[in-house]
View: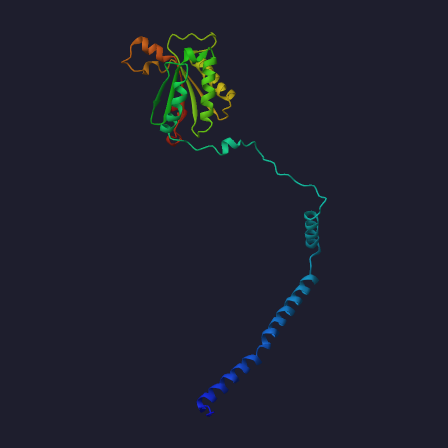
Length: 248
């Protein structure tokens, strides 16, 4: 076998010296780890030697109470009554969609003169008060209709308002009440009927008496104006309009 060239022999010797040099310094890693552990140990000893007894006692008591198996278990309870149907209820829906949902309920109602009109800030459903109300209470037919509407309104996020109007000839059953006060009591009766039907959101009750009679369409005949003046209006509000009650 021919001898290896001289440059190759020198390169092999250099690589061998380099490996021995690396191996000879590997003990420094172990020594550094040992020094770190010793330093940590001495710091721990020093900290334990200077423990504040009061603070240490608080830590011991806290751990004892936390891991004591015989300690009383605390049960979290809600601070206020929360109705899940209100928490997960949809936010204010568009009035066009609400109108579509209400049509089947209104078409099946016993009130023939029911009207539904869409304004810029509300959807108004109007019923004749002479058929809808018996003094300050709702009639049995109106209660059936309100039960169906309460189920629909319970799924909405829209504000509900009830307004009662009358004509100038209205004579309250009690002489102690004005026309406006009487219609307010009628509106409260409708609001209570919604509550009895299971609707738990606030229903704003508004009584106008005959204050809006002169604002009716002048093109209507006198008979039609008097007939339409006595009405119960259920308004589904559009929250985005941020209208006040005074703008009803």
